[in-house]
Image 1 (cartoon, rainbow, N blue to C red):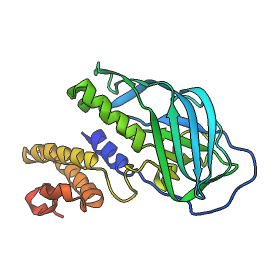
Image 2: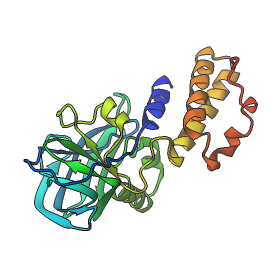
Image 3: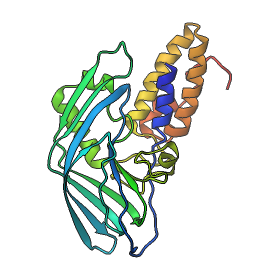
Length: 269
């Protein structure tokens, strides 16, 4: 249960941001990586897609279209170029489906998830614009926890695919790769993306789905705590604090917000 709690707290730290510097930068485009976001209780085995074009829209209205026609192994460092300048919007157009295979993270878990998502495009935006200069970036498709083992096994295929396609299209993000390793470090993720989909969770708020999952976890812990499990009581206290920090202003979470005394964590607050 502790691993689930830590994952929830890490997931809801996902952030978005932008850079307000303006003007065109002269130099060479850096090598950039494209990744697929990690899942929840799943280990990615393979992830591939093909990008046809990337349209870069400047804050002044100018658009530069980069023809890629490039296949990407989203678990490897396949580099691609970005145009120099200051940009407000990016649209990635795919010419092939996003294929993902994942398995359960535990050796005893024989879960296997195979997806073939017909994502047409993904859009990113940055208020005020962001600068591409002699620096590297990582484009993340989806967001941490977007693939959930339990949810994928419960939902029917058509509903599942539609929801996941929407996530890739509207909740992907571009991060600065400060350490040039082709991955998104904890520090880079905490700094937040330079551009993101319009539905990407903001810096300060957890998504509705993540708050709902945290509520479910707290209900399980509350029951175990009531049965005398001291460890569950401690985890419930941590989960409650995380919930107050990240979900307290969410109007959909009134059941837990209205009176914290209704939820006995087994410890004094």
